[in-house]
Length: 259
Image (cartoon, rainbow, N blue to C red):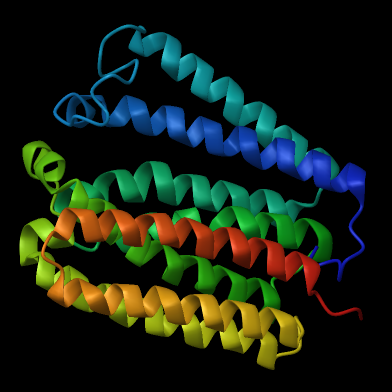
C-alpha cells in the first residue's frame, strides 16, 4: 500500500505474500533445527517438534528446503530479482548470522531485528522495484521497533534465557541496562516515524496517530524504572508493542500519499 501509494495490484500482492511467507517459514524451520538443543532447555520452546523429538530432524530439513525453494520461485517468477535478493538476504541473516550471533554476543538481538525487518521491504520492492528512501525508512522503523519488543520478552523470560545460556542483554548486563536501551530505542523509533512523514511518504493523520501512540509506549517504558514487578511490566510493554506495530501497519497503508 505504501509503495503503490494506495493502489496495489492484487495479483502481485498475493504472489509476494505467498512467496515471502514460504521463505520465512523455511527460515523458521531451519532455525528450529539449529536451535533444537537450546529449545529443549526453555519452557516456552521445549514442546517444539524438534526439541521434543516428535519429528525426525531429516524430515524437517527436507520440509524447510522445499518451503524455501517454492517461496523463492514464486518471488522470482511474479515479482522481480531485487525482491528475491532482499528476501534471500534476510533469510541468510536470520538462519546463518542470527543463529550464530545469538549464541555468542549480546548484540545478537540487533542481528535478529535486521532479519525481522526484511519482509516489509520485500513487499515494498515488489511494487517499486527499487530500494529508495521509503524502503530504507520502513526498514529502520521496523528494526528500532523490534529491539524494545525483544528486550521485553528477554526480561519476562529471563529464567529461560539463563537456562539456555543465551547472552541476551538482561542476562549479561542486567535488567536496568535493558530498560535504558528500551527507552533509547523507543525514542529513536519516534524520530524514524516522523522521518517517514517529513519525507512525504505519508500524511499528517499517520504522524498524529503514531507519535501519540509511541509517546504512550515511551511513558510505559519509563515507568519500568520504578516497576515493583519487572516481569509484569515487561509483559505490558510487550503487549503494547504489538498494538504499536499493528497500528503502524494500518496507518502506512491508509495514509499513503498519492503520487
